[in-house]
Length: 244
Length: 235
Image (spheres, rainbow over the protein chains, first blue to last red):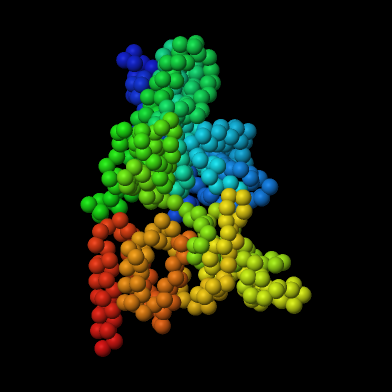
């Protein structure tokens, strides 16, 4: 970060990148682009670029990690050394280990993990470029990759953050807003079941502001969910078109 | 009792299919009396039963299925076989030798070595136990010749066709023997590599266009044209 911007939200209510306070960053999703993986997805969320590969269900290695009554889900969130301005060591950091766990726990409720006991699935999340809100973008892409792998699911999981910048509650924080803002609230959500699978808060918010932020994030999730479904369907649309 | 889909509509996991007095079929689940989809697929309904025909799925063993697998390990009294599914299968030595197996007399790797391929039938499988294979039936056992190809396991029924119409047509047109492993592995054995190649192109075409109608006719035409072209080339 070279110079600190004076104001994060200008007089017109526009943010640093010209967005309104309840506007998402531009979003691009792709599915099934890695032939070697059983399922894969790619997301561009603002300047975030994240690639996800899913393998399995397959036998767990090492074997002692397998569970007799369910399928084990393993996630690995990793940031590429070139994903941030200052080189990041490729070794897993404390933050990455924590995020791997958080992402796994937000995906677990969506997967029928009792159908194929003694197996495991691996979810590899590779952040190629980071710009704030990578955990949310990772969850959105990972859920899409799991669906692409043909693993039975209750619903797709979408994630989106809201937060407080200066004195306003805003949707989808970018890197500068995350660092210089007051609070950040990532929310992961299953829209069809109306169930929240992840809710975190970093910073200080009043109860009213938190409620407002969660509702705003859920609205953002619904927008992303529509796109997520569309992308998944588009991959198989050709099949349908030929049929008609 | 509303339903929320059109016939053969493309659905994603979590999409609401129906509410009330319906029966949840394949790839669906019920929560609070509502039926949702579990996988990406096309919805199909018959009477009160709602199914999702998955477009993306992996093979799950079923007792009695014919599968094709490769030996990954030679053990003390049997082999471990990879059958392209979440579980590895076991093939017992006594089953292959069809006589009592004595470890001191029989060298298992001489019968079947790692990397070799077998056509086998699933003898037993349930949630708590890995699948057991058997080759004690005519037509099963070690594969010595032919070519292998892999397709998505969900496409196998389409390759078989209605009452086996598709597969018997390909067999007839190409003079090839074709063994369909329900785990998505197919063995094609013909008199010469050209015949095998032809059968494989036909199967690939079915896999790519599995949801179109009138596919049998188009595959027949493809095979006839290819055969004609080959005759002309010979002259």
